[in-house]
Length: 167
Picture 1 (cartoon, helix red, strand yellow):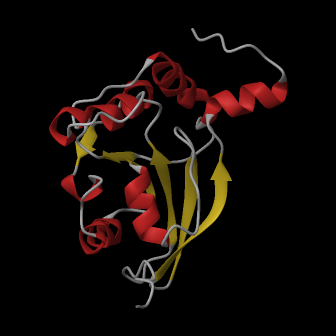
Picture 2 (tube, one colour):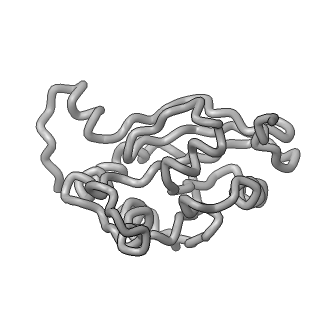
Picture 3 (cartoon, helix red, strand yellow):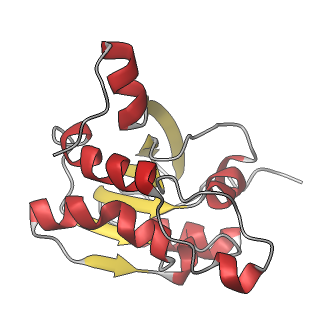
């Protein structure tokens, strides 16, 4: 089977594909797991994403409707005064074709918040993305390519040798 190739329309540009921040351990019941919210470390990372992504240009935020994804982008949306669009095409169980159709309609200046499962489907498990990490996706012709990784804020702080204080 061929890789879906992330085929989209012919417009060129970038999208920032963000994995939601930490939300603790997966719950045994799928219906309960859908309600899982960010844990303290995840809430801290969500607040830090404001400065981690401060130099990134985007004027639209599209998110999975699950609480852990929406909560990840709330601080960014508030800072930039943007509305969070919730889309089922970004749910963990969404068919890859639906996700690709959504990507095709997005402008090149969009932050997309989703789940590991979606990222795995898009790239056939060929890229990893930590919680609160992001990939810059560049569109050339009809294909998307992950071109640069933005590590989670907590990892940046560790590399800088700073403590994890959040305001």
